[in-house]
Image (tube, rainbow, N blue to C red):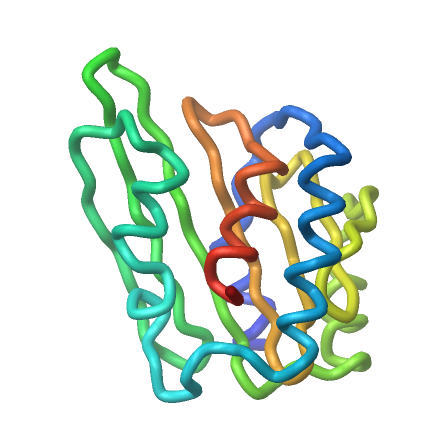
Length: 167
């Protein structure tokens, strides 16, 4: 139940842009690295994993950043930004480290009727445009990534975020 609660927190109801096939091809390469066991330290916090440098690499023109985190059972890290043109957005993750299994991922996804776009990343992944959320099952981890600017999701940047986290 706590997982559902944390998952709901990560959900943002905005529209999004579609990604492109170049990003999808890069996802295949990153997936191979992920599945070979080259993942992050199990003791790392969500904000240790979603570093400021990673967030800034996705939005290099952002001038102001603030952070929100929760290191409970399902660690979250949101990095909000503004730029000098009045644009704002966020880069965020919610993780279920060590809770990833086919059954757990299927259960999490069963609550989300809006999942439409299967993404070739990790063991299994879905991008939900209505929620601006990319949910990925990678070996023993489940990670939900949200990337948006001015309330509009960005599938390409969400996939890039997963690539950067699991490089």
